[in-house]
Length: 294
Image (cartoon, rainbow, N blue to C red; front, side, top):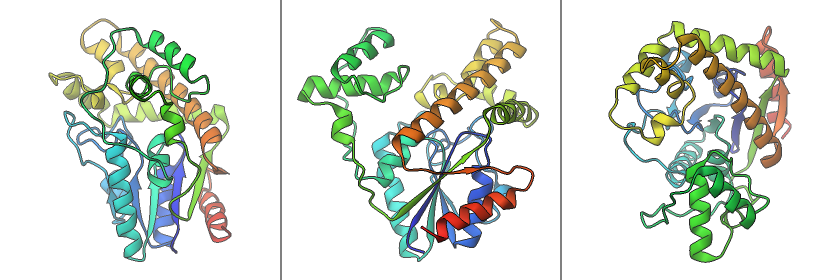
């Protein structure tokens, strides 16, 4: 098989489980497509695949950076494309797995990205004000209102070139034969699975992992981006209860899942599969049917 398989969807929907089964069937190697799982030591909150779950399948672009290292969209694009080419050269199947849509598009589509420079314009205004300025420049922007770094980069690019960054990057031209599989389920089922997943994370040591990160002297993007750490900081500094902090993790995770679905529905040609959690082999069969008839 000379095509790329891409598996998308929110946390808790079965992406890891499906990726392992497809890797076995299609002689595959798995590439991380989650912006938080590139970092070492951030395992439980990011739902990173465990060594046991890997089942000896090769996995790439996991645990490649430390918390204090900068890792940009440009870096991921370069690294992921290199891995895809290497896997294809071995006559194996690259399988991208994750929920960071922009990473996936940057790797698979003919996006023209540039290495981030240190001379970008800096802004002191609140994020909401900058976002409204961006909307005046680009009313169709898909940048999230809370993604300050992306907002600043778009504004900086416009002020230096007079051009809209997203239009520069936008393309529907795939670089490789690709099929995108999306896992979905009823919203109520997903939300309950997300709630349960947070409880399981706590049993697996989330509180201890978050405390280690809380005690770091730096507050880098790697630390503040993932859901599951910053929400617990209020518990560690005794400004909120543990119960309230866990409720925030669950709420933020549910909100993020909703945003992920919206993004993938609008940005990519996804083949959606209704997950059968009780008989997951049916989900695998549906995925294989889509791949084989691509």
